[in-house]
Length: 101
Picture 1 (tube, rainbow, N blue to C red):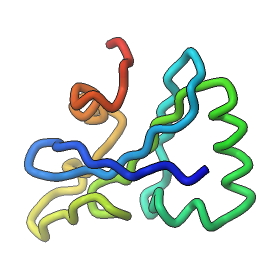
Picture 2 (picture 1 turned 135 degrees about the vertical axis):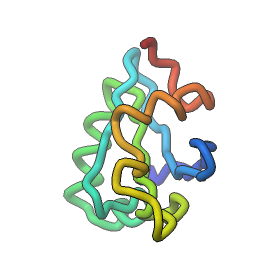
Picture 3 (picture 1 turned 135 degrees about the horizontal axis):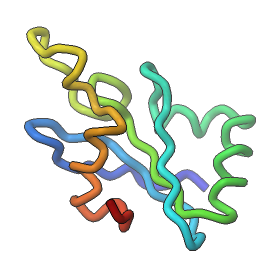
Picture 4 (picture 1 turned 90 degrees about the vertical axis):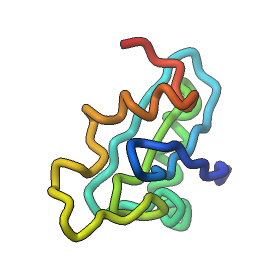
């Protein structure tokens, strides 16, 4: 069940994200600093984990800025400009997530 990768504008960057599952709750997965959401689908143990999550939730995962399919960080940008849980709310408004604040 490899979901389609989509992109949301966050400030001056495009952030790659995927949405899958159809459960009654939204579950946002915040992966590690060097993750790539497209590549993880080639690792069967991880696929089992996310398929289980998708059995009871709508799962939303994204590549942080500078990783995977998201736009690269500019050399002059500070680490605080990476997509973090706090900035996830900015892309929530793109329609990827129906989460409440």
